[in-house]
Image 1: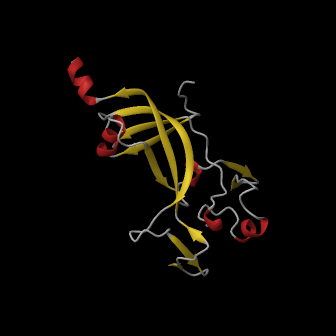
Image 2: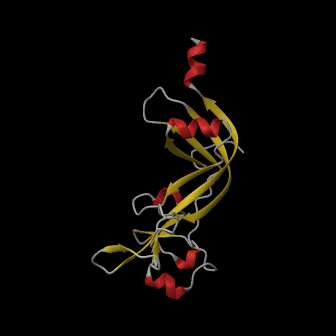
Image 3: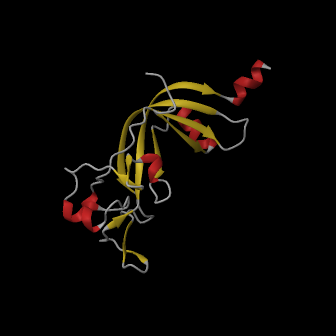
Amino acid sequence: MKPTKENTLYLVIKQVFFDAILNGTKKQEYREIKDTTYTKFLDTAKVNDDVRIMFDSDKITEEVFDKYPNDPMIYNNGVYPYLPIEYKFLDLAVGYKKDRDTMTIAVEDIHFEPMMTKFGKEARFSEDGVRMRIDENGELCIWQIVYTLGEIVETDLKKDRKQQD
């Protein structure tokens, strides 16, 4: 399979993480799922002008789903019910400048994990309709999508371009 626009996710990363992936010491790439970014990571469908997140009905009860419909931050007893977009490749770029290092890398696996606080606890919270508050038993959670990285398909490195000049 070859990378295409449809099966490849473009991500900007820092040089230190790019270099760690390139030398094989970083095997996973993490991204926080937010209200503003979930459509980039989660499988969605448009229903009557609304965006609906696709979910696995075996991973969530109707009662829980109805309480927090279409909420990418639902805790759901630590089981993420939503489906990822099945990207096969990540297109990684260092920063936003035109002259930057880039690579395309295969994705071996995609899963979800709760983010952890600096105290080693899941980043859970509650909301009462007015405000959110940190709550270790909260029904909401900050989740991250985890891409397990495979073979590097292609690189375009500044140092290689300089050697060709």
